[in-house]
Amino acid sequence: MVSELRRDPTSGAWVAIASARSRRPSDFKIVHGEQKTGTCPFCPGNEHMTPPEVLALGREGQEPDVEGWQVRIVPNKFPAFSLDYEDSTDTDIPADGEYGLYVSTPAVGIHEVVVESPEHDSTLGEHSQKQMEDILFAIISRFRSLREDDRLRYLQAFKNWGREGGASLSHTHCQLIAIPIVPKVIQVELDYAKQYKDRTGKCLYCDTVEKEIEIGERVLEESQHFLAFCPYASKFPYEAWIVPKRHNQAFEEISRDELADLATMLHNVARMLELAFDDVPYNIVWHTAPWKGDFSAYYHWHLELIPRLARIAGFELGTGYYINPTAPEVAAAALRESVS
Ligand SMILES: [Zn+2]
Ligand SMILES: [Zn+2]
Ligand SMILES: [Zn+2]
Image 1 (spheres, helix red, strand yellow):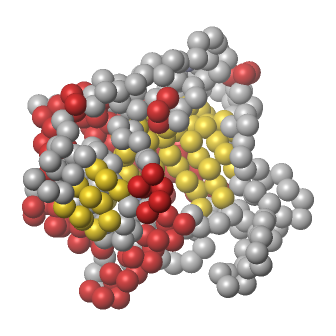
Image 2 (cartoon, rainbow, N blue to C red):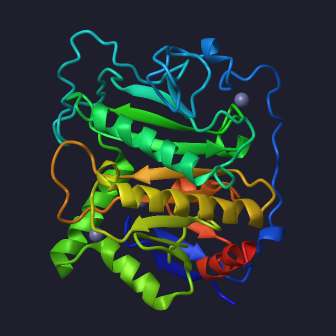
């Protein structure tokens, strides 16, 4: 069997689906890094070990930085971005073409940690429905308040899980990094979505949802408001996307019903990964509209879950294209099986 080159319609990236290898979950050897031992700064009772919280849900009473919370957001102890810049009211970065050779701007932004649960060992696939809703609600609250800051253009929400996924602390958490520039990856998605809209008059993501439901074989789960599937041109083995059915550019604009539905969906997809593999390391990235400008005609927010089963190597670094050893049709079937 030969490999097939597939084009990712959302980024233009090409992926070689090396289906001859068609690796099943058991074919991947997962390397478990050593976890740091010692006192966990995210566990209840250790609130003094983190910088003062910016948000806590579920605690009775007004006193901050004590136990009793269900979700807690704190600044990263070693932030890559900070709002503490004097004279940083203007972070307008020159447009392409106006750059000199070297350009810099203050790293204005925030870097926060969302401690998902008071329970150290709980996982996304184990949290209760209420816990999942609280996590999403807490993240949305930060989106809504940070977008009021004129200096910020984008909030990247993400999760690193497992050592290979980049998590340095084992207590389940997500992260938020707000930055003064629109990420390159998002700019590419905006450009491709706009081109598609200009060419067809339709939304690339709405069309993808419709098409995946019609084809069916890559679908992981369908709910009232969301579709989870392994994308046609999956860059990584067992990659899964969660896309809302309602056309909407921004994650923070979801309704209460959609939030509850997403909580279930995210839990279920994480559970599929957790059951298919032995404690798989993974990343989740939120892709949503930047805060300056209106992209509502063609952009459509979504989540990408990326198991870290294959390393990015020379070909990927050199070309920006990918070799995926597991066809998404095989991945979807195996993930569905894991919970049946
Ligand atoms: Zn802990
Ligand atoms: Zn759409
Ligand atoms: Zn995306």
